View 1 (cartoon, rainbow, N blue to C red):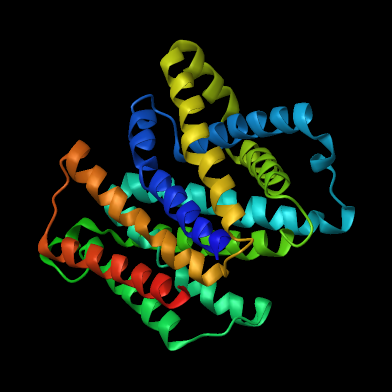
View 2 (cartoon, rainbow, N blue to C red):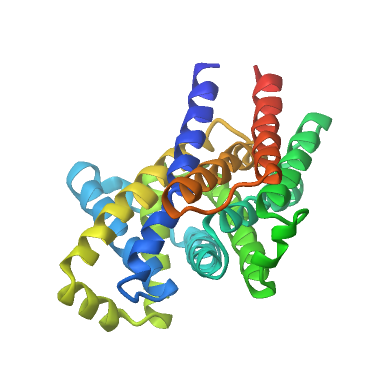
Length: 293
């Protein structure tokens, strides 16, 4: 029971950090980084930290079997690189709160994938929580209000794609956790994602910007630690003792954090529907936690 409660705390902490990632995106945008450059830079720096740490503390965790490479490629390319890139683009096209809530329609996709892959049971509590979570996302994003004009068609599509990519992380991670340590999974996830991103991103451009503006490099380092290394360690560790669908719903606390940050730091508007959406998300989390306890 203690481990399950800790898992809940891990997910909430991870989601809270992710909810604040839009701040670094806005800052890095001022240095004219493209969306893919931000993703590649953060993943590369995060990977250096993780591989460096494991090389010094436990090199055995860096060993993986050849037959499992396909799963690492899946989690690195089709999840990590894909959803991070889509999320960055969504933030630039819409707002912090809208980008976050679109990302957190992912519980629907996680649930649909978990049924055949993990044979997870779909209870009325879980369905109610997911429904409330989706409604909350819709309310916060302004779909049911006069602010719908803030959501562009392109921004909406990138947001949904980010949600699908994020859903696959929970699926691939749970599969790999049966055999590998969470640090092993995260290290190779970041490595594969950063290498893949290097083929479609302007790496020389990243170096040029960092040389001209050292503060940009400092921002990347801090962002990699706070928004990549720490939260992914927490979230992946939580999946050991928690169903993927449950974790994805609890992680929907991110829009709450993103909305608060958007209002306090970037003066984004908060409406009645936004508040109702936040209440729905928190209620969904409460339903799952209450049922588990």
